[in-house]
Image (tube, rainbow over all chains, first blue to last red; front, side):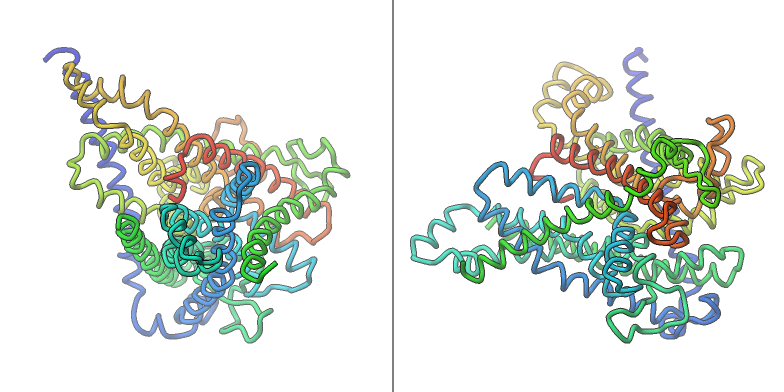
Length: 283
Length: 285
């Protein structure tokens, strides 16, 4: 075998083994979560409240709490995100303003999640005096979700050929009618795709909500806007810190599997929604 | 001004105000520590009760953990990306990419749990340590966390090189290795750099997984390259201590100062990356 062929063979095989190694590690991760999670899983676990600081009992209120946080965050973020995307694609004419808006969105995307928690702690909990509140947690998650949704919505609106806009204006439609009848029906799919991607990320976030929105135990459902809530990620955190207790660890795996299932539901829906989006834009 | 227009301009203004507000609040809250401690912030000793707020151990921890993660994940991820983009049967590429995207979405707290339950114990046994919660453990865990991102972005970078380059290079009689080394990698270089910088930003800002396995001791290991000792990163420090420090104290303010350093680095990395490397059509990923 010539020298070149030998190097090529080494290269191809090392690329193959790197892939096998990555595949092995990633399969191990998923496998461990599913295997250990299934051991903790039963109807009782899903449908009862946690007891004994989470070491026994179930995770019903953690599931409800997590969903409550992200659903409220979605309600808060969607109108603002769609408005911002419309502003970016239909109203901005100056390139400078466009650059500024991009910089702001990318900066927001680059801020580490723990920093959002700190911002919430200073601004809402201390300066505005809200105390530990699930609603503040939703606001912070909404801010974190904003850039993703703005960018996907903007892309899908911006990719509508200008012939559509021109045809609509030629029919005598006002700007708002063009937006409402022509641009939004397409843009809404982009917004939903972005929302699903953002939801998959937001529901697993721990750092932004652990100082400002959650309590580890002792509560079930928040009664008012400024009550704390229990969530899956912070529950897993609390249990992971008492990992020497096998019962706590067992429940942590169960909670992880449930959390992962929720994340997968959102991200798989996002994949489908994106495929649908592609089909529309190819029409 | 009519109502729809007010709504659209209003929401854009609201979004912009939010971003600016985050930065303003961080800067104002860290001012207390900057004005009272000054250069004393850049020393080796963190001892709030004694009024010492040296942030160097945390900066070192963040840098060390990120460096370890990138050293492991970059070569492995790039090789795997070359495989999925150039060697794998194209029919398999779509499912592999979807699987990777989904894996990239595993919440970091679950990585933390796996780190606590497996990796820290393995590292402890392997090197015969009292506790397996070390800088190395955190680095390895982070490497695994950023691996899917690196693979999928590098794969995109390679795959976006037009087919004709491969065909001409193969037509000249080059082996696969030579096609990749001499043709594809030079073309895709900018995008690959972008992918690695983006992963770097993610690794620096990662909190939960690092916090659970790094050991949380505020010192630079002795000697400094001994990564088998417990350490502390900026994010793990924030996660552990922010709730214990009282609002308005120098202690709190010094913690916010660290967070400000972190934000300055990650924000400049992310905006630099997304601005200069990634084209409009792929911004969403």
